[in-house]
Length: 103
Image (cartoon, rainbow, N blue to C red; front, top):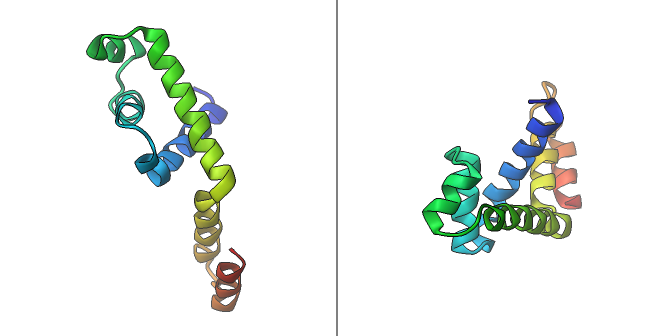
């Protein structure tokens, strides 16, 4: 598993954490089973009585949907900026306050 795949998975999981309530029940279930419970596409398909391609397509559409929401709202990006600022050893509270006001 390469770093870019792992980084992409982490980003997708963060987006899911932020926006999961905007997904349908099945989108959430498929996503959780695949990414958190390590079910294979085939296992999920059998569980729901649909094709493996249907699960794959649903997961891909869910990822695109999450990315589109983030592109518009940028909640995850904003939180990451604030986390980066707060994690510095010499935290400048005025800088953080200004950044919060900008966001």
